[in-house]
Length: 522
Ligand code: AYL
Image (cartoon, rainbow, N blue to C red; front, side, top):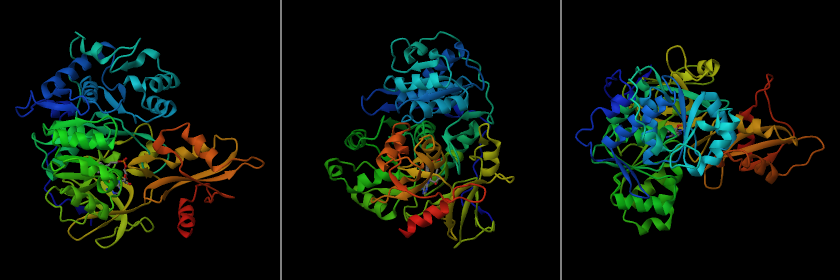
């Protein structure tokens, strides 16, 4: 029997994300929607709507029309939200790129998504320009938010006197294309519709107590679905104030929390380590924090409790996936009594199954199985990739997460394992297939396989098993440097072991299970 959310269903209106967020600000039109935590510069709700409309007009002037894809490659700033919603208001689609990406990684996303334009910021321009060239886009397809010689800036776009294009979006149209490797293979465009995103905002709203008075810290990046939905768009939906940070820096993070009296902090587990253990934390008055919410990777309950005790706040955990817009499970604000090893209840409108990956049989409370999720927040599929879509979404509409979970009689889910290839380093995705393909481009490497292993701090890190080409010599440091030069820092190979042969199935698939077993035996 599928497990239904214990919460009553919410009605999902057939509306575009822009209209959903920008029609009524609950009287807070002139209040700050977003504040740059560093400079203090803010944008009000009404200004944000006006800026988004101007950006939409300027994009239409440049030929962007319904269904076109526009990339954003930028750190978190209040302007990120204006650009994001400007693209949507132009009836176009946002593809948000990881701001740590190398030119090659960004070029892949631009090409794969068919992006026509790219918004970036001047510190990222060199990588953006190289990526645009590699992707075969004209050099003038870049807009540099803060301006750079020879490129249009955000100010130029805001100065457009063109008409705002007529809204021409239905709820089932694609809104965003974030990239995720899912259960296997390379990063793929995840098709999330306006309805998916609106649904997840309404589902999340039922679990929490975010209001117009709430201040939310957005240190997690807006390019990732966690920052995009849970920080940026939830903040806008609740008419709350979102304080942005361009990157994580512990003293600055603590200063901003204290200065802006932030009540709600969303983190990934590595930040919990700092908050629980770092001596500098004691130098700040953090009594403003009511709730710290952790997601994107498993939170160690002991660590979570230590953090909550030190800061005198509630600690909650949620579970999600880019393909789920992203939140499918979380602990509601008023249930801090739940086991912190768990990820709480299924959100409204969600049905789940736990399925034994070996037998395909559904398991009940007390058993373990792969978590399958069905609901209005489930993606439509992967862009231009029917095979990967078919392998992830079944005929009944269940998304097979590749995560293994348990559920209690009360309906509390805990994620206990992963059956997919994906590695998570500090909450960020590291697709092993991508590292393996890269390693094989090295002439000294005959074969390679990558799995996640735990380092001394318990953090999951990518480990490469390498078969050296006959007659060649390569050291572990050389292998690591080869990868590090070509990809974003979170995807670095951090452990190397040389091996005679990569275990493979008859059909040539890497037997990761065997590598994991070998690892466990060591
Ligand atoms: P992606 N415990 C264990 N694993 C988790 C958890 C968790 N609480 N949350 C996410 N994961 C892993 O697409 C899991 O393997 O999205 C899952 O399949 O980058 C994978 O991360 C998905 O990685 C929120 C808000 C979670 C955001 C998110 C994260 C979305 C990360 C909960 O409330």
